[in-house]
Image (cartoon, rainbow, N blue to C red):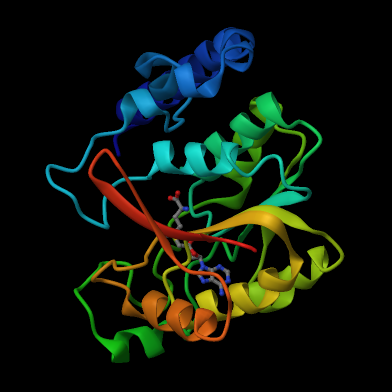
Length: 254
Ligand SMILES: C[S@@+](CC[C@H](N)C(=O)[O-])C[C@H]1O[C@@H](n2cnc3c(N)ncnc32)[C@H](O)[C@@H]1O
């Protein structure tokens, strides 16, 4: 990159920082569900106003914010905290944190991710087949930055959002003594879904919801396999939810 371009990029990022700081009080005082598109774009926060609906019903698509907000809101009566497994660049974590800060400030949100992408567990999913995805490789989804997301978290004053860096098998025990009212699983891989389900299920309060991002996603068949195996001997059944032509599946703990 030429020096001029580098300087222009630096100036742009400084101006964005200034604009974000200047509008933060407005943003934090306005329910995140009702942020206008420009405010979401300025803070790089996915909000209902900047979601593009799928052209026809499909279990894939950009972050399912309306579904996430609806299920999360309907779960806040249940005791316990909130977790997201699979954070990447925070496209769903940050809006979840904002909704919680505005509606249930006593609840914490834990965002679990290696922040270095997949380890060799992905090889099992490559062997399972499914449609191709550029992230389906060791190191896939590694193009993120823990410090950058941590800076965004602080800029938005999301004091009850905790980024937990590392592989789930090593990090989940940090919240072993907590209960949960809502868990968003967006972690693509068979092993990751299986580990998260085994960990969170006994820690869900009655009425808590678990939302699966990749169920029926033709790129990640390991999700269906892990979820179906896990729920086979449980009383809970999967429920489909469709908004903006995005189809997702979840269950509620009985
Ligand atoms: C599809 S991305 C998450 C997308 C994110 N929710 C968003 O809104 O953009 C999947 C993430 O899961 C993480 N992941 C999958 N299995 C993991 C594991 N066992 N431990 C830690 N992170 C894992 C990857 O590092 C990756 O960042």
